[in-house]
Image (cartoon, rainbow, N blue to C red):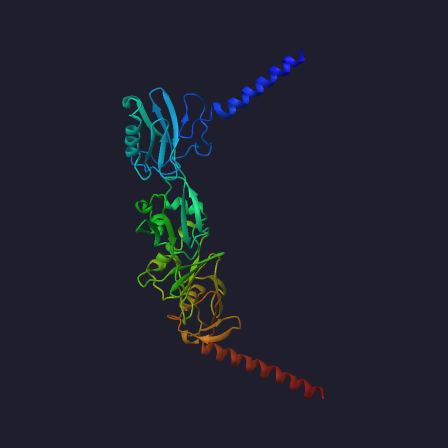
Length: 392
């Protein structure tokens, strides 16, 4: 009895093994879906989120899976690396580089030798993945595997984005013998989606660097980048090209412009659209409140919020002139880490954050104060002399 059960067990194991090895594996040319479950890889059949419906203009290539209905039989075939598909008992046909509509007709012509054409059907089951090569000013250069119907902007974002010194105005998509020039900044800033090309198998992408030399440095809190210089660009243009519109707005208060061989100057954000700068200029954006300090013969001494368009006369007026306020040519400004007093033109000379504006008393008031001081000093001396004489 024990031997009988052992034999039964061995027969079951053999039958299970035979079914696993041969029953559902299909042939080398195609998989018969009607006779058992498909053996296609799960990765190839993973669902995709397509931007739009895949129509007959989709280009067939290696890695695509096609489902074939041949009368009462279902087959799954894959496009081989040479672009061909093999159909069991019918032969093979090359569909690589053909549109889906063209591939359908070629396959139906092939299978019509054995099956009735009106009872045959071809459809896409899973789309191929392919490699795209990207070089230049990107975070991750090299080859990347992507899904079909991926656009350039999505691909760049997936691989980590562009480097700060990337020339976003001339990204080059090399497709065969043609080169497509894409203004990436125009898409991301102004929403010009027409330039957002759909990537294809065999595409090579090059992102140029901003050339060293003639450029504009844009300095933001915790971030610095550069933009290629062009004579007709304003600061607002450089601001947008630097991608600042996509960064968090931390509440910029003012803009400092440092042109070569010139003193720094300050402007408001509203003036950026009308401001043109020289090559190799540094433009820094400030978020902290800046102050100018006012002291001397005014009603209200202290600190005042920095206003880029104001001159010394504006701050003095805000402080309140009075009867002892000196003339404009007496005004001095203390500036720098080791302040030194310098006379300025109160109506035209620029005032920088951190400046101390000193407004002395008028000459008449200064002379009157000196006279009162001398009178007081003489009074003290004479009193001391009288006390000394009387004591002695």
